[in-house]
Image 1 (tube, rainbow, N blue to C red):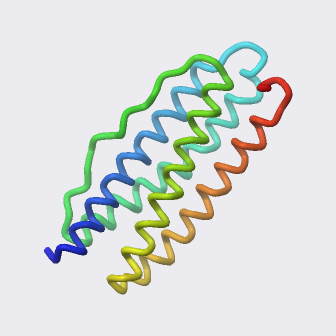
Image 2 (image 1 turned 90 degrees about the horizontal axis):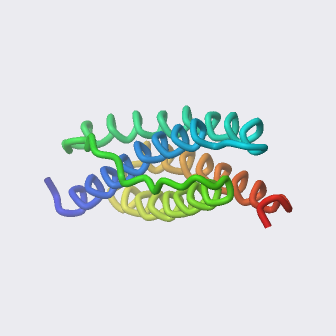
Length: 144
């Protein structure tokens, strides 16, 4: 495999591990959030899972199609119990994912992988939306 393509595949595997982690993170937060935040944050966290799972499925397929071996190991998930910390950790993960996808988009452009570039643009838009929802939720005086 070409060195630039291998670098891209390695990056996509890092991203895949991150998406697996996001599914676990959002599921964990949805099932452990408690108190007054439960009614609002449980469905909020659950609603993010399908997008992250869809990203993981796409990345896994793309890695295999590019000749790589998709990872089966998620990135570590930080366990937190306070609602504000859950939102902050999720926001940080989304910000990291955004930066990774922007880097991957540049790598894919350099290799002329137009379909991947377009899909990464869609995924960047999804992750930006997730980030903005988390940031907006953290502005609530409850989390000040």
